[in-house]
Image 1 (spheres, rainbow, N blue to C red):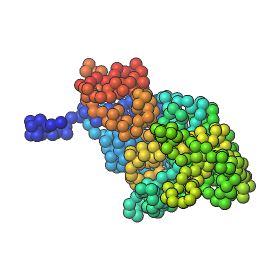
Image 2: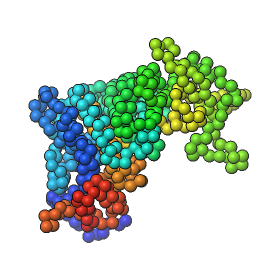
Image 3: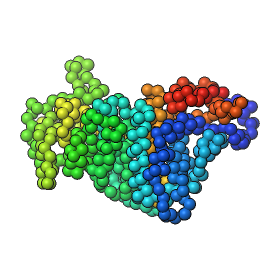
Image 4: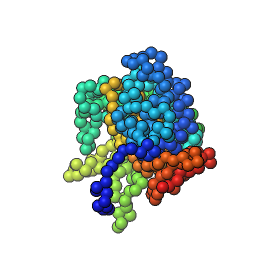
Length: 468
């Protein structure tokens, strides 16, 4: 690719009021409105008393939709929200607010307001499932995953920031940050969406508030159409009596890692040697000579009573996966590392282990959020950051719904891919014969998919945009 010499002497001018850089926001925000985003915000989020500035809490629907639209266009901090005011964006959307106004609005949030906004996020997700092709097969089987992450912050100005444990290059380290706790909903054929997120201090224990988050996620899944089996998955931070009791009371299955202690080790020791069976993971490689798997992972199970010291002990299956300890290969007999999890699922042992290990799908959601709106915690105010995190999940679910209406490939694409191919498409606004027309780039590689989204959102109410 070579620049023409004539353009090296060109004069750039930022003077065209009819150009927009994010024309894909038109169908994206139209889908959000068809799922009732503004109505939900207006009915649930109310600022009755000023926290700092009297007028900052006015029109929460317009300001929150502006924030979500800016996030969909790639904003990962408050200043970046000005992207929705460039060029002709004011001609495409009404009530577009400046970034300082939106930052002032976020700082008006209290804990109660974040709970109201979280209710909006759950209701909007339910509406998106009805308006798009999100979560196919939700009536048959649903997976709910719960996990937390640590978002690092720098300096001492962030409210709630404290030192917490995180992994970098496989090693546990302490970092100053804030710790969101999130739940996701997914199906066998559908990419995960965020059921809820709650911002906490960096030093907060991973399992704090987990049972309540699980209850809300189960209720959201059922409201969205989950009439079949629901399986809740989590790692050792969530293998506690409160989470398991919440699952049992809600009538769902659970599959959670349990911390190894004397009782767990004793249960593992009772398993006979012949009970261990090799497990065939998806993508496992077989030895070309013997046909055996190039893997030493084996699984077995036993009955186990967990939380025996509490008022509500639970008896279910203890499934254990074991692998050779490669660091101790010189031993006379093989040394195994054991990874137990506690479940009441009815799958065979090997299949239950494979299903449990797919809990890692929640990490793809975290990676998506970190690559987008949660790249930063943009405010020094804790409640403002909590509201920002909830807006980020609304944006994530919205883009996921947009992907399902675009193409099968985009239905499982990353948020960054959707922004690059569908949202941040430049266009020129025209009104020939007073009929609004969007002129988009000719030979745009994803033009067919873009028009498919347009048709699925607007139907035949408006003609598709033209290529220029």
